[in-house]
Image 1 (tube, rainbow, N blue to C red):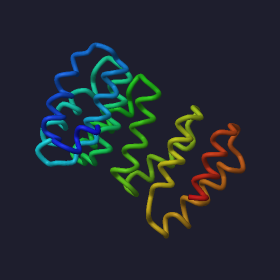
Image 2 (tube, one colour):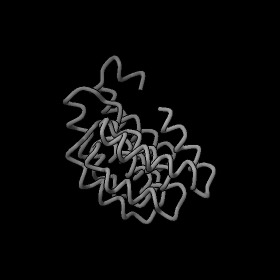
Image 3 (cartoon, helix red, strand yellow):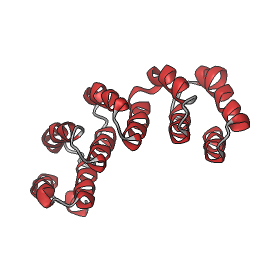
Amino acid sequence: IALMRFDETASVNLLLKMLDSGDEDVLSRIILALGEVRTKPAQEKVIPLLRSLTTQPSDWVRISAIASLGNLKDYESVELIEAALQDKSQEVREISVGVLSRLKGKRMLEDLKTLVMEDEYSMRSVAIAGLGSIEDDSLQNEVILPLLLAKLKNDEELIVRVRAAFTILD
């Protein structure tokens, strides 16, 4: 990442060459670094690759690719990320909810309201965080805050109650 500050195109080319490493941890770190590119030419080179990686066998690769697309604010990938909500991996579904919350904003409200009632506590927690990212005063006061307060008071999982408390504070 430090290299990118000097010559982003050269850095991207170097990172792309390193994608053949085979090591899942290294690969996911490279993918996350590619999500940090800021120049238009570098993004045009990286985004199609990241999109293709969202269907790779490795959970960590899919997670990293979705996170990087979100970091790049690639709104054209919304449908692709929505498809990842059906992924077999819970972690992939969770990162998809977080990224979609940032990319779609209040258009994600109904989905988040449903997800906040999921059986899986981690999905409820991610949905709560997503609700906190919606910047609309009337929705915050009339819809989001009552939902968060209900989760704070009544959720069976401590981690979900804590997430609700922190989301309210933020």
